[in-house]
Length: 363
Image 1 (cartoon, rainbow, N blue to C red):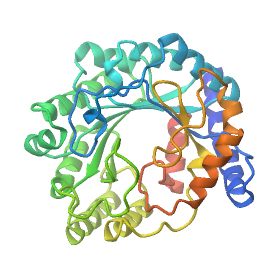
Image 2 (image 1 turned 60 degrees about the vertical axis):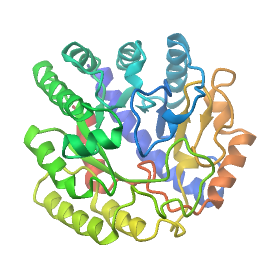
Image 3 (image 1 turned 180 degrees about the vertical axis):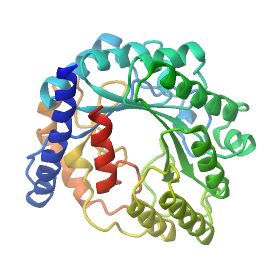
């Protein structure tokens, strides 16, 4: 118990120190920091047909690391980074039969994991096992306040009932097992659901979930090279006046105590993004000094839009790849990227969020 608490404080301290080193890395061009945002994709397979994603449309699927290989990767990172957080996504990670085992491995090695899922495969037994694995967060995707909207956007009839049911089961298990795992809802803002965002927030508040995380629609994942005018004539792109009015209402509700997770500055940036997503970004992108992503076949990357891979962790330790020549070239390209990006890897937490995270880690 004491060791676990010390690890959590080490994680908080590591992140604070690395943040300062990351800013220095941006200004000097030298690699002075370790990554603080680690993400892994155990599988690119998915059981949904989401309109905002092209991954499922591809006939090609990359290979997947074995359970043993993923455990080695996670442990190698632990030895390099010390206490760290890892975000597990996909594809749909619950399609892997070993996903609970990987979460348990993270728990037993004091690696603070979070996982995102569409909820389709979460039943009572799976919910109990997921919570028992003690992830830091479980994030459920919900793209509408009604079955019609969510199911249409996700391409699967019954998806809404499965997602909301999964959230309820996980929340009940969290209470029954007496753990602090966060149960969050993640919603992508689109034309079809923008008027339902307050309905989603109503439900999050009513269910007493941990919070609602919002992200604006972006160019489809899994598509070809970035097109700056991708949003023009895109049927998912929302009306600017409508989205601004809704965001303003949401911010007011956040001030009133509703469970909206992100800092207000992120909503201000979202309004600028929806005004003109083809505009150039303000300030440098930080993914090259703070993010480390590992794909299902072990390839390592900073950003899926810029130089997709600069090595493979099956062949070379992530520490060596992080400071290698190919990583430096990727950082050079990232520095030149002026894309107006609103991925959650871009969002910087406000002071209140940082304090809340520190409080959660200290439990």
